[in-house]
Image 1 (cartoon, rainbow, N blue to C red):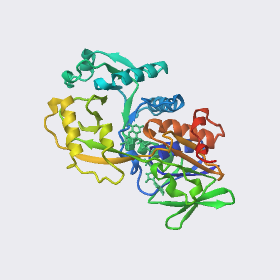
Image 2: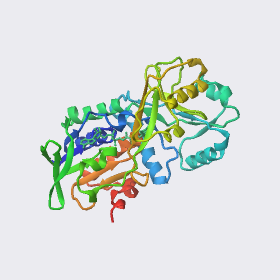
Image 3: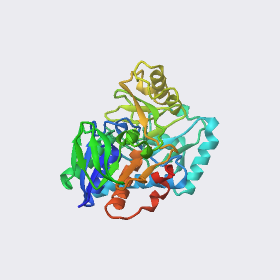
Image 4: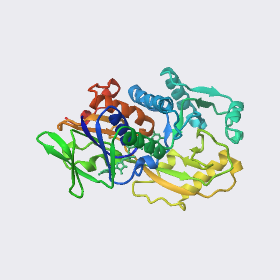
Length: 368
Ligand SMILES: Cc1cc2nc3c(=O)[nH]c(=O)nc-3n(C[C@H](O)[C@H](O)[C@H](O)COP(=O)(O)OP(=O)(O)OC[C@H]3O[C@@H](n4cnc5c(N)ncnc54)[C@H](O)[C@@H]3O)c2cc1C
C-alpha cells in the first residue's frame, strides 16, 4: 500500500486526502494549525468559472463545479454547497467587457442567460430595481457557493472514518527528508519525522515554507482580499450577487458576506483588519444601496484572506522536478476546483493515470 503524507488540511488537502484514501493509499494528513484555519476559512468561496481564461484553466474550474454538484449524488447530501446560480450586472463603463465575457462563456458552452428586471425581481425580490437602471443582467444558473470549513470536515471525515486515513493537527512541517534524489517523508519543526513514499504539499500560500531547499520553491503571488460580514439582516438574498456597487452572498442565518474588488487594492498583506476601517463602512453603505430594506447595519466581523496564487496566476499541480515522490497542489479558486483536483491527484499518484486536464499546469514550468 502506498504511504502518502498530505501536508495541509484546507479545501485542497482535505479533497486530496479523501480521494487518495478512497483509492487505497495509506494517508496521513499533517496540519500546523486546524482544518480550515488557512485561506479556506476566509474565502468568498463562490463556485464559478467566470473570467478564468485561458480555456484549460476555465475547464479546471468547470470540472470543479461539476464535481461539487456530483458529490450530492455520490454522498446523498452536501449541506456545505449552495446552488441557485449567481446574478451579475455592472456599471455602464464596463458594459462592453461584460458583454464580451458573456459571449466568451457562451462560446465555451457555459450556462449564461440574459434576464429582465422582472426576472431579477422574481429571483431576488428585495433588490432595489432602481439601482439596475438600463444595465444588462446575466444569470449563471450552475454557479453557487460553498461553506469551505464544513466541506473540509466532510472530506476529512470520509477519509478517516470510511477509508482509514489519519489526521495530526499541530504538526508543522519544516522540511522534506531525503535519500538521494528521493523524498522519504517529512521532518516537523519539533524534530519528529514521518515516513512516506509520496509527499503531497497542499499548504496553499505557505507552499514554500515546508521545503528548505530554495531550488524547490515555486514563485507565488499571495494577494490579499477583504471580506466584511454583517449580522443577520432582513433580506432574502439566496444566491451570489455581483452588482455595480458591491458583491455579496449569503453567509448563514441571514448574514451577508460582502466583497468589492477595488477595496482589495486598498489593503496589503500587513493590514490588520478591523470593523472600524473606512473600507468596512463603505461596503456596508454599498450593500444598503442594493437592499435598502436592511436598514443601517454594523459589521459583525471583517477578515483579510490571502489568496495562494502561483506566480503566473494559474494552478500548479503535479510532481516537482528534481525530487522523486514530491508533489504539490496550489491554486487560487481552490474552493471551486478542489473536488476535481482531489480526483486527479488520486488518479495520478495511486492509479498511475496522468490527467490531461493538468497538462498545462505542471509545476515543472517554473523550473529550468
Ligand atoms: C478573499 C478571498 C476570496 C476568495 N474567493 C474565492 C472564490 O470566490 N472562489 C474560489 O474558488 N476560491 C476563492 N478564493 C481562493 C480559495 O479560498 C483558495 O484557493 C483555497 O482556500 C486554498 O485552499 P488550500 O487548501 O490550498 O489552502 P489553505 O486553506 O490555506 O490550507 C493550507 C493549510 O496548510 C496548513 N499549513 C501551512 N503551513 C504548514 C506547515 N508548515 N506544516 C503543516 N501544515 C501547514 C495551514 O494550517 C492550512 O490549514 C478566495 C480567497 C480569498 C482570500
